[in-house]
Length: 433
Image 1: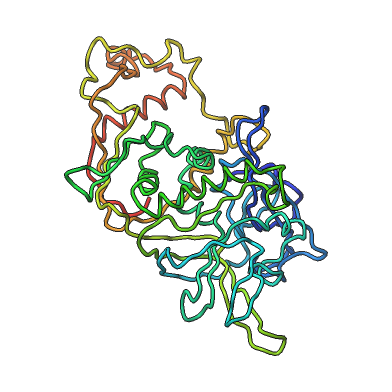
Image 2 (image 1 turned 120 degrees about the vertical axis):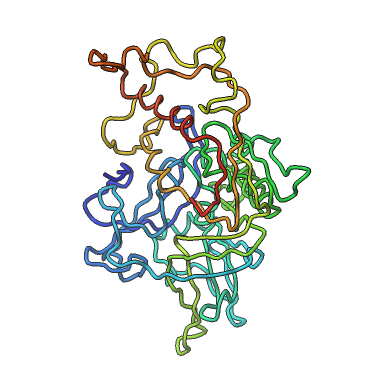
């Protein structure tokens, strides 16, 4: 089964996810920030969901507020029926680009762009048809724009939220931390290049984050562009939050993600999106741009060729794992252990915590290929607690073996620990995920 987002359960009609908007900070009754999601109803027989003729007539538009941790699930241009994502009748146009990140400049949703010396509205009705209220609310959102990305297009436009999804949104927990400027709660501040090997970067992850997230988080520390884009995004969110309720209409708007590609070197990527036309006048042929709604594949070279991954705390066996005086690392009773949810439950942003939805968001989380990167999982030096033993060996031998009464959640914990024991630290070559 797939994730079912309760906030998208409008009716049995197909709905297109148009755009991701501003952030609502957590309140005293809610543990997690929300993000505005704008949707438009599609015609039942529509093809490419990004084309304006695919929208239903008369047009219907909705706005929902979804927990920020579910951001990896919220793909621009995706189609939803009764809260469940479904494949579009026709896949949107695909284009491949290879550009330097320095070619992009950030603009507002309602900015004007120059095409052959004439000014045109970047996101006019012909670009992506959305509701009037949505267009007004999105006026302050950010888009990265590059001119003349290839011979076919005059302009390439990528919403900052799409870049964030691909380059930083490695997991729901990573999203929750980054939108509040808490990178140092994902990787230890002491992470950095090793003195004796400039091409080797050491990153120490906190225990709630996976090894697959290490390269993206390390890049935000190691690369000049990564540090700049992360700082720019954080500062913009802080500024917008501070100005809410003050000054002009633009100042009172919700905070929006503001960033471009956080890489020092050229990026090669395959994008889904739609062509957008710019007309000099009614009788002229159009000049074409391309609006990116999703990035499917992305590769680049990071400022380090060797990444050493350490841990603040995890379940791996340390070199002192067999010491008899280690204290127990678990409750004496399995009652306190969290249990795996029974079946697939709908994701509802009114519920805290949203762990049932995190497994779906984690599967959809962004990732990219770091060309030529070698990663090393650093061995654990000191273990503070004793590993849990599943059952005494005396009880599992012979015909009178006693069945293991351990509850399922406890068995899963044991399985995770045994996986670490079975696969010791090893050297691997990165090829993406």
